[in-house]
Structure formats: structure tokens, C-alpha cells
Amino acid sequence: MYYKITRSTPLFKKLQEINKGIIAARCAIMDTLKKMGYTGKFASASSSYLVSCDAVEITTGKPEGWKVVGESWQQLYYPKVSNKKDSKILNALPRISNDVINKPLNFYFHVGENLTCYHRPSLIFSDNCVLVSTTSKEYAPVDGMKEILESEYIKLEKQINAEKA
Image (cartoon, rainbow, N blue to C red; front, side, top):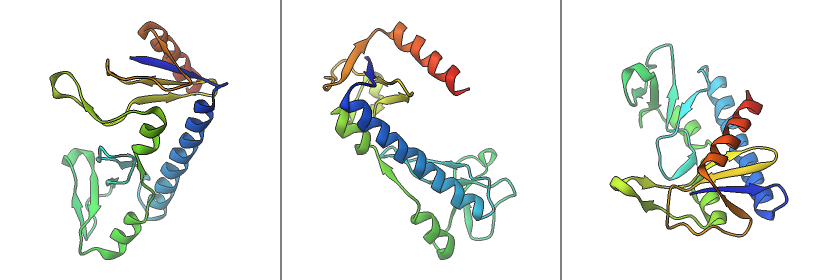
């Protein structure tokens, strides 16, 4: 199911504040990683978090005290437990739980067709609206959400992506 949240609603304002926090958290992680001498890119593997640093992109090869995370071609690493200095730095980085988005939207974990797990809805932010895709036929929208057709969602998504480009 597809929804649009317009600028005039309190829900829009709440979600925009949440988005500002997400952007700030990602920037803080990237800045910390760059100060450590890395690219600043990171991966979030946890299905419980919108933002978390669960792996660090390191293009110069595996540093001493780090372990490979994922496939070798991904160049993703994480400090070993024995690497207390870097572990402490990464453990102090911001983490934002799915609940931050799920609670205002009254969205809950569910299992869809073919046992697909949904931990949170998909959101696309713009200055004029927030688009929400729940992929759930059982979802009941909250105040401020207007159900839209998939065709309108796709059209608005393309417009938003063109504005960001």
C-alpha cells in the first residue's frame, strides 16, 4: 500500500524531524570514520536499526586488529573484540532504532508473502511530502496519511529523485 503525507500535517513535521536526526547520525558516523582514515562509508546489517555502523569500508586492505565482514569484494571490516580502541569508538557511534519511524506510523514487524519480513515501511522524504510504502494489505494508516495509487507513488518518487539529483 502506498501513502502520501503532505506538508500541512503534524505527522509530516514529526517525520521531517526524525529525518534530520537520521541525516545527522549518518554524518556523525561518516565524519568519525574519515577521521580514523577510512572512506567514511559504512554498512548497516541490523534489521532493528535505521542507522547503525555494523561494518566499515576500508579500501586499503584489512588493518591489524580488524576482521572481514561480508564478502571480500565488499571491503567491509569490523574491529575484533581484542581491538578495544577501535571497538570503543565504533560502539559510541549513533544508532537509531526502527521504532523511531514505526511508532508514529503505527507500523509493526510482520511477515508477508513468501515469508518476507518487514521491519519498517519504506519512506521517501522531500520538502513537500513524505511517501510511505508499507507492502502490507493489513496496515491501517494513521492521521495525516492519504492512500495513493502505485502509479502516483512512482510518479512522485521519480520527481523527488530528480530534485535530489
